[in-house]
Image (tube, rainbow, N blue to C red; front, side):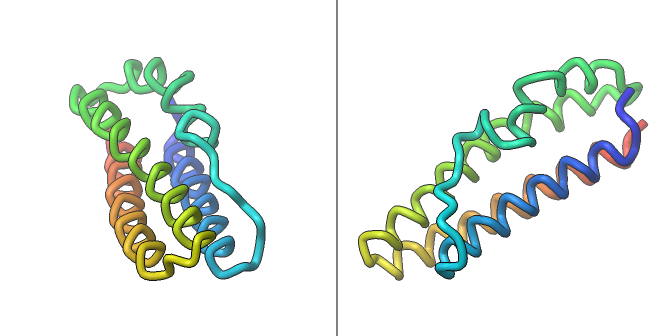
Length: 119
């Protein structure tokens, strides 16, 4: 079974990715984002994550895990949209994508915290 700290580490990976997107939108770095398979959370979700979740005692863990896949993909799509809109000067569009990105970020963070509280 994954250690309790494991889900907090995945949460931290997610938060660090979001910070890189935010910094890029502020012109502080040239981060272009990745697809949802290439980030640390994605590598776990589409790698060893399912096996780790299957070993958990709580039967809801698999449902929570599965419910992260689509929002995680959408999170990455929105990050790239925000960066693309900023590059073409559509600051309002970038702001809207960023707002939605943060909504998905909160959803994913809550799911990781929910997994962390399960046995």
